[in-house]
Image (cartoon, rainbow, N blue to C red):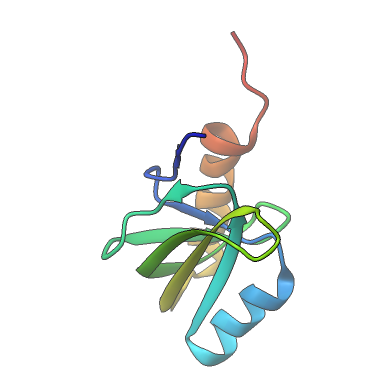
Length: 106
């Protein structure tokens, strides 16, 4: 059992519903598999399920637990700081693909 770090300041949504809740209500929570560490109190870039930068969020809570099915999960709660402009989204999407989402080359 180990922890996977998410300290690279990226929150990638796996569900459109979670992202829609963030943009509509100004806050949301997402569930990630495994124990992970998110930088509570820091800002991060939120990415859509198809890896497009969408918003800046403030991580308000990171709760790692074993659920009733015996799975290790982390719930990450966040508040919307602001939605990105189209220009910011384009630049951060390209940067995200280069830094986080592309195949690792050795």
